[in-house]
Amino acid sequence: MKVSPFIPGVIGVVIVVAIGAAVLSKRTSSSQTSVTSTSVTDQITNEENTPNVPLPTEEDIIRTFYNLINEGRPADAISMMTSFLVGNDTSKQAWGVQFNSFKSVKVLAIEPSMQEEWTSTKHTYKVTLDVQMKPEAQNAPIPNYGWENGQNIRWITLEKVENLFKIVVIATGP
Image (cartoon, rainbow, N blue to C red; front, side):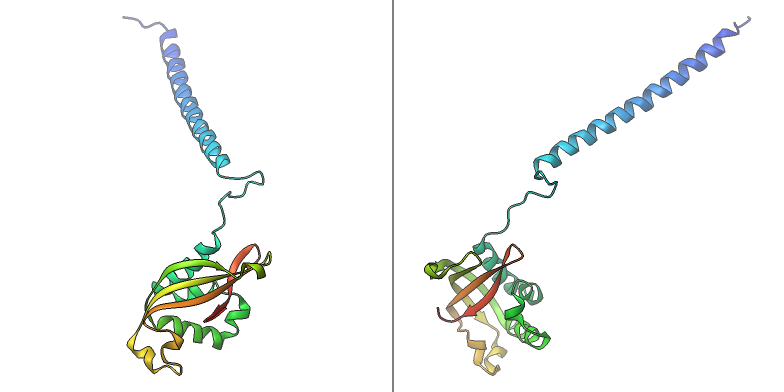
């Protein structure tokens, strides 16, 4: 049986067309996935193509600060304070020692305070906390660093630094 000389050529063309169709199909599928991803990204970004995520509220900042202390992460808590409050490395270390003296600290309530004195960059809140100090904190130069086991009230003043509020004052009274 003699095979026509055109058959191998036709088979070769069919194979090439099939491979080309498979490659083209894969490329089309990838670009459709990319388009879908871009569409989702467009929904979560603003016109300047930066993430459109809301900034934390001032109450969130205060809660996060005390949650970090409660979790034993004083360095992260200190990073939420202004350089005015933190001071130099010695002062930063003293804050860390104080924050490590907490066995637990939990925010019970946050209330706006002294609103008549608020500016566009400074706000004060009355914060009620439930505190348990470690026993060794009793031996600090000021026992328990001025904290009592149980309910404590502190006035926290936040100051806007580079479009984000940071803690600038922690006080025992208004």
